[in-house]
Image (tube, rainbow, N blue to C red):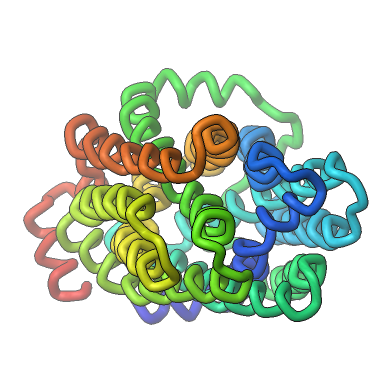
Amino acid sequence: MQREHRRLLLPVYLPTVLLACGQGVMVPILPLYALEFDDSYKLAGFVVSAAWIGTLLADLPTGLLLPRLGFRRSMVIGCGLFGAGTIALSFAHVAPELILYRFVAGIGTALWGLSRHTYVTHAVPPGARGRAIAVFGGINRIGWFAGPAVGGLLGQLYGLDVPILVAGMMAVAALIVAAIAVEAPTGWNPPLSHRLDVSVLGEIVRDRRRELVAAGSAQIFAQMIRAARQLVIPLYGSEVIGLDRAQVGFILSLMSLVDMSLFVPAGMVMDRYGRKAAAVPSFLMLGLGMALIPLTASYWTLLGAALVLGLGNGIGSGTMMTLGADLAPRSRTGEFLGLWRLIGDSGQAIAPLVIGAVADALGLVFTAGAVAGLGLAAAGTLALFVEETRWKHETCPATARQQVAKGD
C-alpha cells in the first residue's frame, strides 16, 4: 500500500491539496462576496452553484476527451481554467461576471477531477482502492481544513476579494506541479483515433442501467447535503447568529479538522467491511448535523453542529469515488466516470440553487432543517437498493477479505 501512496504523491496528492486549500479559502467568503453585489440569498446560491453547473455540463465531454487528451494535458488545462476563472472572479465588477467566472472554474474542475479520479482507478488495484481513494479524499480535506480559517481571516483583514485571488494563485501552483509530475499509469491504453465516439455513452447506460439509477440516486442525495454544508453554515452563522467572517471561517476549519482526521479509518472500513459500511453511517450523521443547525443560537452551538457534520463527512471519505471506480468497466473507465461524476455533480449544482430560493422564501432556519432529510434519503437508498461492490472484482470473497485483513 505504501508503494501506491508514493506513486500518487506528486501527480495526485500534492496538486489536490493545493487546489483544495484554494477552494477552502473561498468557502466562508464566496456567499458573502456575492451578497456585496446584490442582497439576495438566491444570487449567493447561484454564484456557489455556477461552478457546479460548469462542472456538470463538462463531465460527459471530459469523459470522452480524456482518453485522447491524456492525463497530464487534462490536469494542466483543468487547473488552468480553475485558476483563470478564480483570479478573474476577484476583479469582478457586476453580478453576471461572478456567475461567468465561476462557470469557467467549474469546467476546469471537471477536467481536473475526472482525470485524477481515472488516474487513481488505473494506478491502484481494487483490493487497496478504498484506502487509496480515502487518503486522496483525506488529503483533499486537509486543504479544506486549512483554507476556511485563512480565507475568513484574510477577508476580515483585507477584504473579500483578496482570499479569492489567493485561491486562484494556488491553482496556478497546482498546474505547475501537474505539468511536471504526471505520467500515464501502467495499463493505460488510450485509443489511437482522435474521433469522439458518443455511442459509447449509450452502451454504458444500457449495460450499467441498474447501477446508475440506484447508486446514482444515492450519490445525488449525498452530494446535495455535502454541498449544502458549504452554503448553509456561512449564511446561517453570519445572517442569523451574527458571527463575523473570521468566526465563520474558524467553524468551517474545525469542521474540516474532524472531517480530515477520519480518512484513514474510512478507507480501512471500506476495504475490510465494504463500501456501504462506511457510506450509510456517514450520510445518517450528515443528516443529524443538518437537523441540529436550526437549534443553534451562538458560536459554540453552531460549532457543535458543524463538528457533527465533520464527523459524518469524515467517515464517508472517498465512498462515492470508490463506488464509482468499482462500478466502472475497465475498458471504458473515463467515459463511465464522466457519467458517474455527472450524476453526483448534478446534486452539488442543484443544492445551492434550491437552498438559495427556499431561504429567500421561507428563511434560513426552515431551510437548514429541511436539508437534513437528504442525509436520510442518501443512506436509505444506498442501504436498500445498492449492492455491495467491494467483492465484485474478487473470485473468492472470503479469501479476499482475509487478504485485506492481513494488509496484502
